[in-house]
Amino acid sequence: MSVIIKRPEIKSVDFCVDENIWGHRLYDEQLPHLAVLEFLGVLGSNLDRPLKLRDEDGGTAKFKPQRQIRLRGLLFNNPYVESIADGAASDEEKWRQWFDRFAQGATGNGDADMAYLRSSFASFDDFAKAIELLRSSSFESRSNKRWSSKFVFPFGPDALYEDLEIDSRGKMSNDRRFFARTGELLYLMLARSKRGGELGAILAKRLFNREAPMNRLARALQGDPQHADDPRLAGYLPEATNPRFDQTCEDWLSILARDMPIYDALEHLIAISGINMLLYFLERAKKVAGDDDPVEIVCEIVSKERTKVRALSGDSYQFNQGLPAKAVRAHVESIRLDAGWVAAASAEFPEAEQVKLMRERFQWPPADGGGDDDYTGKSPDALVMDLVENALARHEQHVGKIHAAWSRAIGLSSRRLSRRTRYAPNDRLLKSIVVSIVDDRMQFDEFLTEAKRRYGLILGDAEGSRLLDAKLVDQEELSENRNNLETRLVGLGLVRRLSDSCSFVENPFAFKGEAAC
Image (cartoon, rainbow, N blue to C red):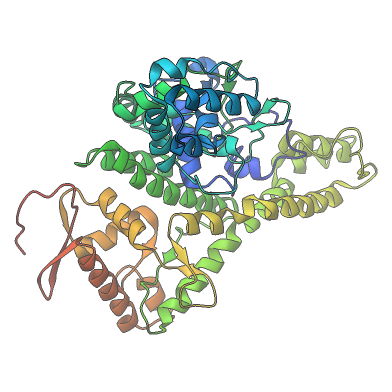
């Protein structure tokens, strides 16, 4: 049984229900690539003890994020650099024009004096090309997000910074929209895993090389790093240990052991982090709702023909989509079964004791009566029902959308050739799963077994034995789905068929020779 860490008071919320179950916080708008970027920012602030928690920090991590106002302004709030570079003016005149234009939009947060750029680049055209190169490799560079919420690829320590909102007067705030603390929870998950320290040492060495060419380019644009004024504590993660934390760490170590550049590995780390955090979300929901069965993800390998597997995949998706709301209701209502709640019934003032217990558990109801809502005079049972209603309403706004948003973002779900969403993994996700699972080569059936063990993926008839026993699908249809996957992986160069009954999944980044059947 895992140890639940005592939750601190969370002043930014009216009550703690989602936070008690999953931590503070998981958020739908913080997609896996943003979670990994936020994670790297926390890691970069703890390079003296990467993924090792200090006792004095109370089981969490302390960090001081970078802000890099100059770098992000040059990349994403500088639309005129290209037109100036393309002009026929002299180099001196180009610099003058650009300094004038950039000063007009400066925020006043260390970006008023940009004269250092003249000594960092041989010419204005070189400066413009450097911006074009880094901008072209950034995340969501063409999105309509505010410029202060766009991110350069994490080429090294100088390219990392937190999400910010900067108003017209230059006032900065981290409004927790795109860096909502999900990356902080990922840091805590990995730090609490059995091999977290080992992973931290590898990441510190490979991802935080200040002399890497692209990081040097980012440093030339940014100049000296800019940090937040004060250190802060990472978010709240309820469990001290969890098998999913260990699996996520093992997957990261596996991917980092492959024969590929670290920047290529990041794509796979993001996908694998996404599926593991999605499984953490669903597994915690099932556990809190009182369901001990493992999470199942029935996957259709898309084919032109409509099959029973497609319908089952849609059913699997809808079932998992409903799990978090069940957990919210169960978590609130479970207080009635608490020993303290039962004992309070025989106290001198039973209702007061039960309300006190609710405040301890949920930070609710408010002691002042509740502002616009008056909770005074209500019975504890009525308060429980009110909290269920309020918690479900808030849950639907963001946390309840995580399953849909994350599964789509990592390529696990799709509506292709179908009216409803179902699990249908795309090629990029399948490749990341192969890179994570297969060291060198592995028999295809063993690969399917391992994919189910790690990620709950049901892809063939052996993995779908429960569905067969329940007569929800014919073995022939699941076997056909299995064959469709094999054909797809052959097309991706990830499976080699040695005979009709012997196929091997091969990791293209760890190939070591021939295998015998």
